[in-house]
Amino acid sequence: MKTIENLRVRKVVRCPGHLLILTDRGYFRAQAVIGADGVGAVIRKTTGFGPGKMGRLWVAEIPVDPAQSRCFTEQVLIIDLSYISRGLGGYYWEFPCLMGDRPFLSTGIVDSNPDSRRRVGSSSFLLEILKERGLRTDGMMQKAFPIRHFNPRERFSRPRMLLCGDALGSDPLFSEGISQALEFGRLSAQAVYDGFSRSDLSFSNYTRSVLKSRAGQELAAYARIAKYFYGPHAELFLSMLYKEPELRSLIGCSYAGTSNMHGRFMAMTKHIAKHFWNAKRNVAEFRAAAEVSV
Image (cartoon, rainbow, N blue to C red; front, top):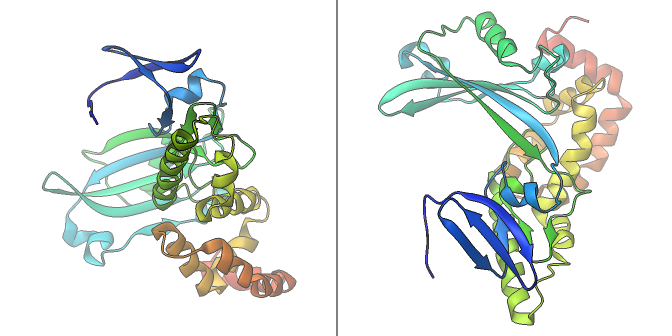
């Protein structure tokens, strides 16, 4: 096996009996290709997979004094969902990190419904949040990234081609995807191995395998929940997270890949139904705890 690094793929062209991979250093012939090149997956652009549902991340990395930063002193990751009430289709985060040997605070927002006409979900909205939170922005470095969210109605394979990792899609609810990408890596490798073993590179069963996998079931559930979580019923779902520590733990375990969230989520159906039945009381308690004005 030969590994070639620092090679940019420009396009993948379907030819009779093989694929032609055009790069910045010539071309290669391939019997099969796994698109594991992230959000900007080349084969999505050139073979009719479709663009998927796109979101956006706005990031600001701020140099800080570790002794004056809660994230450093308490070693915590802060996720703030309160900006949903202002129309953000996502959340704000803070976590401590080192860049070189310098301490930085990584901050940012994720928006699952980006629109250039909206101030919410933009870089200016992030700067507004930082100002409100009293964070100094001297020496700040800003970045922006697209993110592709999992869509269970898409196809994840074509003859001789598979999607994997962020090219396939990340969690539509919280925009995470590391543990899912690892599982999709295993599925895509198995699909290629089986395809060559049977001399069948149609990969016709790959989409079904993705949807039936632990990660696929979780992401499909997240896609359904996200429609309501970032909408007019946001407080109801936030109050559920507030009231149900088992649900919070379950989400954390699913990101780590240490639990089958889909299976355990079904076991919590009675608790969720009870929460919905007492929706008004639960939302009122959540508002009081979060000091959210009505």
